[in-house]
Structures are given as structure tokens and as C-alpha cells.
Image 1 (cartoon, rainbow, N blue to C red):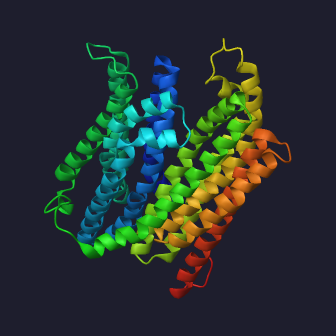
Image 2 (tube, rainbow, N blue to C red; image 1 turned 135 degrees about the vertical axis):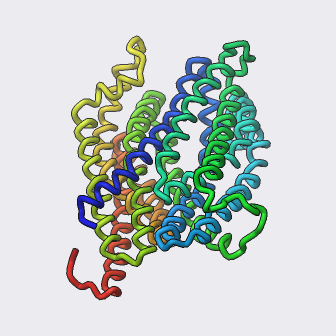
Image 3 (cartoon, one colour; image 1 turned 90 degrees about the vertical axis):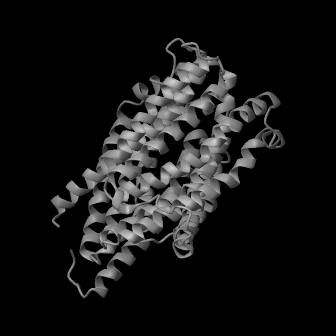
Length: 454
């Protein structure tokens, strides 16, 4: 394939995936906005409970992320049986993880109190998690099937299901949080029921699609039959990916804690800047998924040239998106920050002033964040997860968190210093992971006897 063909193929995969990630982020955003309209205490409790749910969800999603390159490789090799085996066991291990997490949700109230959270907030968060926790199993199954269809280059169904989920979430939230259309006014419990409804509807839609549109894979025929070999393969690749995800989430959680030490306004500015940066990150996450699929398919065909060219194209597209983001963050920070703050809020000028400094740091942050997430996608494409897990742990926790603390407090740089510390950890991760991928790629190319550079 030429570079132009690689660009077209990557965009055909990546754009729907980017759209689905942005839509997924919109679900979280609408939860926050609608609960904020209802009651600030309910919003705080949902943030607390939602954080616990997300930490476990992102860890359990490691198995879904592991399914993606394995299915892509098997599909490229024309092995439909292996596609079925891997996906089915990915569903199995996700069900197991989801069920194991349920006790934490059912007894979250005393757990949160023991962690020093206010009793009133802990109680509300417990009410939320006892309902929303039931969505963990369907949420993880949705992730596995999304990975399955993405690896088969059926990304449009992933996008449409996620967009439909946004609509379901808004409608059910509106009815159950506020008590509209004859529904009971349930407040934060209404948001929990909405989350459960969204995940249940999403998994139902994907299962129906799998049965009707891709019957050749027979994913649910004799679903109860255990496949020990495939189960071990999924577990072996999935658990280090899950811990890598957990390490990155923990890095940002630590940053949020440190920003809280600087005061309420600094934390508010951090939250807004993080929301803006997260929207931009969804673009790179979509390209990262596309990288996993493209590299996984090239690996299945033993096509080292295709693997290298595909990787170069994904990196180039991601960096082009970074350029646009940097221009926006440095050019119109007041406009971006102002979208999240009531014009009548007396603290608006001070929050925006703090946020401008954070977005300036985020301009650098985007470059290195894009590099590390794309590098992770490339390495997952060649089914390399354990060494990247160690690289992530060292980069995020032995470099990122300490540097953020030193710059933010002893050196007196405040919030901008904390964000530069995040950038330092992510930059190291990106450098280490990119170096590892390219060494592996060129080694594979030499094995095929192609010594001329691409």
C-alpha cells in the first residue's frame, strides 16, 4: 500500500472511533451537567462514586483492549475460528471481573467513609454505586464487542451505538433525575438508573448486530463452552494493559489531589482545563485504536512494510491533530475556558486566569500525551503489553508524580508546575514506548530480508 492508501484506510478506521470516544465522553459530561443543575451535593457524590466506578472499569477494560489486536491479527490471517475463540473468552473474563467488582459497589458507603470522605457525600455515593455498579458487567461486555467490531473494521456500528447511548442517557436522566413525564424524582439514583439503562441498551444492540449481521463468527453459539487456551491468551495480554490503564488514571487522580491543595479555584480551573484536554485526547485515543488494528492486521499478514508505513501514518495524523490543539489552547484560551463558567459567577475572572496558565502547559501536555497513547496502541498491535506496563509505572509514578509535586510546591509554580510534571511523566513514557516499538518493527523487517528503508 502507498502512503496515501494508508492515510485513507487509517481515517476510515479512526474517524468513527474518534467520534465514538467523543460521544462516550459526552455521556459523562451530560451526567455532570444535569446533576449540577439538580443539586451540587448530588454532583459531588456522583463525581466521587463515578471515580471509583471508572477506576475499576478502566482496569477491567484491559481485557477488551487485549481482544482488539488479537482479533485484528486473526482476521487478517483469515482465521474466523480464532476470532470467535478470542472474542468469546474476552467476554468470559470480562464477566468474571465485573462480578468480582460488585462487592466494592454494594459496600462502597463504609469504604468511602473509611477513606475520609464526608458521611453525607459517602452515603449518596453509596446509593449511586449500588445501582450503577450493576452496569459494570454490561459496560465491560460493550467494550469487548466494540473492540471486536473495530478490529474487523466495522467501526460505524461502534459509532452509532455510542451516539444512541448518548441519547438514551439524556432522556433517562431528564426523566428520573428531575421526575419529568410522570417518572419519580430520584436525583442521583436516577442518574445511576440511566447509566444502567445505557449499558444494557448498548450491549443489547451490539449482540443483535453480531447475530444478524456477522453470523459467520457465531459468537454466542455454545457460549457456555470454556476454551482454556484462548482464555489464557486473553488474560495474559489483558491484565498488563489493565494495570497500565490504572497507572495512567492514578497519575491524573494524584494531580487532582495536588490541585486541591492549592484551593477551590485552582481545583475548579484544573477540572475545566482537564475537560478541554480530555476532548482533544479522544482524537488521539481514536488514532491509537486505529494503530492497534492496522498494526495487528499487518502482523497477521507478516507485512513488515505495511506495519511500518501504517505506524508512520498514524503518528503523522495524530501530530497534525496536536498542531490544531496547540493553536487553540494558546490562541483562544479565554474562549474555551469561558464555555464552562457562568458569566455571572464572581469567581469567573480568577478561574479563567488560572486556567490560561494550565492550558499553556496543556499545549505541551498534548504533544507528549498523544505520543504515549499512540505508542501504546502500536505496541498493543504487536501484542506487547508487559514491558509497556513497567514503562508506564516508572514514567507516571516514579517521574510524573514526584516532578509534579516538586514543580508545584517546593519550586512554587503552582498548578502549571503540576501539569508540567504530568507532561514529564507522559513524555518519558512516550519516548520509551516509541523506541521499543520501532526497534521491534525494524527487527521484524530485517527478519523478512528487506534491508532498504521504507
